[in-house]
Length: 322
Picture (cartoon, rainbow, N blue to C red):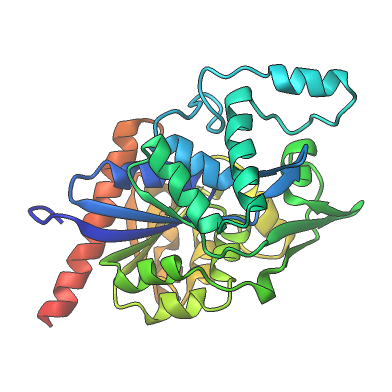
């Protein structure tokens, strides 16, 4: 992409890995970034609508994220939560005081009937996120996790239970009736490059692709599609994706990611530690490319983003020339 300006890149992302990829792409001077985030982790707490993945994207791109924990706002206090706890409220979902301000604003606007997509856009701009943050749908979609103790909301499983229960089944309430947000469809259709972040394929990316019309739009898009594996040597850096995929009978490695994205992505960027899986990935129709995919520093994020961007646009240029 060197020498060109403002290539339209659309990123599908959720979780901390998705936010890191978004930061890297947003730092590239020749990229105009749109991020389609996961909304299936959303839930109601203390009467407020909380959107964890969208907020993590916003805070990360605005450089106000708490980088120690990877979510929430830096320099945060928890006095509101302390008061709620004193009053006997269930406070296992850690929400900081600054964070509460955003949830109050979002909930007020939703109660007025404003579109969730418009709210997310306005919040991102107010924070100076430096990228368009888009929702895959304006409808309510929520991930449910079935364990031996019964069904849990995703936040109950992820935060309250700390991902400890064995996952028996996943469900996405409302997904079959959801309608794709026109802004998300446009971002896919108009993109020069589409990237699938190294996010959890099951609970971060699947709810985006599962919105009726989204996978079809991705397949129809003429832009090259590059996915980045969240696995390094059969383990994920953060989160429960490896244990979830294994528990549900899927391969918990880069080849399992390739199976998930077969027909949706052209290229899968994998870590050097997974080079031995390149043949299997190629057999599934994805071109494997090895790199160092661990993103620890801001420099790591920008380097990997540069590689992904150059890789995708180089493929597009070759196809155009042919």
